[in-house]
Amino acid sequence: MKISTKGRVAATTAFLTIALVAGMIWWANDEVGDANERRRETTDLARGLTELRLVTFEYMLHRHERPREQERRVHERLERLIADSPLAGDAQIEALGTLRRRNQEAHRLFLELAATPSVEGTSAKQAEAIRRFEAQVSSRLLILQQESLADAFFLTDFSTERINAAQQRVVLVIIAGLSLNALIAGAATWFIRRDVLSPIARLQQATREVASGDLDYQLHNDSDDEIGETARNFDAMTHSLRTSFRQIERSNQELAALNQEIEAFSYSVSHDLRAPLRSMDGFSLALLEDYGDKLDAEAKDSLQRVRAASQRMGRLIDELLGLSRVTRTELKRGPVNLSEVAREIAESLGHQSPQRHVEWRIEEGMTVHADKSLMQIALQNLLENAWKFTGKTEQAVIRIGMRVVDGAKACFVADNGVGFDMTYADRLFGAFQRLHHENEFSGTGIGLATVQRIIRRHEGKVWVEALPGQGATFFFSLKEPVP
Image (cartoon, rainbow, N blue to C red; front, side):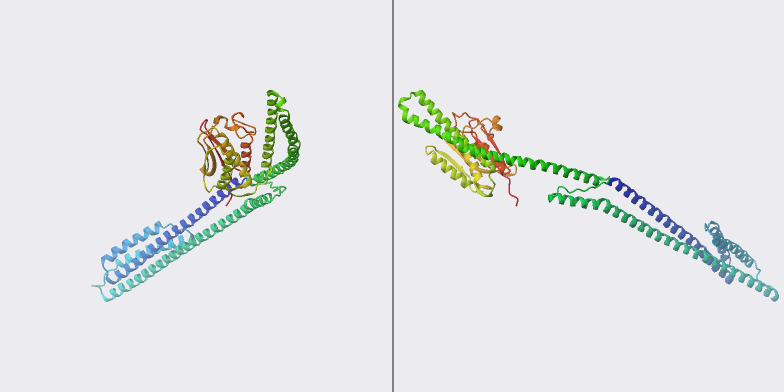
């Protein structure tokens, strides 16, 4: 069963339980209200009987007409209360019937007492008889009223007991509801621990094991819920990772073998190709020096072309070897002051071509966290490019600085040289790619490819902005160190 389905079942169960407990509490509370209503009615009966007793005493003492009228109204009210009483139960119904008979008998006796003639104007014997009759009727009347009052108190006590019983039921219902809720909460906690928390803990343990390098760790969770599906996906992921790492390992082995072949090739290029090139250049120079007076102009031009081609090929080999070394060199990161590096390169270029007048604008305090030797190579290539492509500019200006681009620090090298069309900018950083003919500006087309590889090794990026005839600006940004 899915966790979402289990959640819906648990929520429905909790809702139904709460509804059931609320219904039971409502029923018990209704019982308490009904018992209070019955107690009020029995209290009204007891109050009416007490009032009737007081009216009887008043009539016995004063023999006025007002108590007789009050007795009649009280009697009628008691009759209505007794007739409308909804009491249930054999004992209560019997007590209510007895109370009705006694009340009627007491009313009859009161009427007899009220109909007793006055003793005034009668003989002593008749007066004594009248007094004895009144005493007997009064005594019987008071006894009946006392017994009726006792019955009313019995009904009141019964109503009180019913209230207490109803209140006890309310308490029991609340305790039962709380117990049931506690039981449901305990069951829900157990299910959550078994079906959610424990599988999540195993999943966390699995992630820690995989993070530590144990790709053979398996969860083996066969449950049908979301966590089981996640566990199966996790096992499939570790299987894919194992397969991928095996492929990567094989690729690394193949790459290591290829690097060894490249090393061997580089050694061969460095030693086996340079020697013939030096021989070609040397013998061509010897022919020009020793037999130059015997060669015509066309032969001399051919030898000069051989020398230039061999020298260019030697430079190309050096550039390729330099590009290869840049790719394989181990990075040694640290603070690098680009302002000082740029100033040293600018002085070196000025010494190489003292006849040129170039305005250098180097921003102070440019510092990056990088490999110093590689950054020297990258900046050397960028500044040599700027120096070269401002060669035909009368007032050449080369600027080196730093600015914030897209929230990150970026260094730039800008010149006011010949520039180029940005349509071909995507070709600029490829090896042997040139946007100007060699007759205009010399070069091998390796320098910017070297710059790009150095910046990528620092997890950065390099880009350019240029316009024909208005110069070019090369930007590069490096990955900032984690504080």
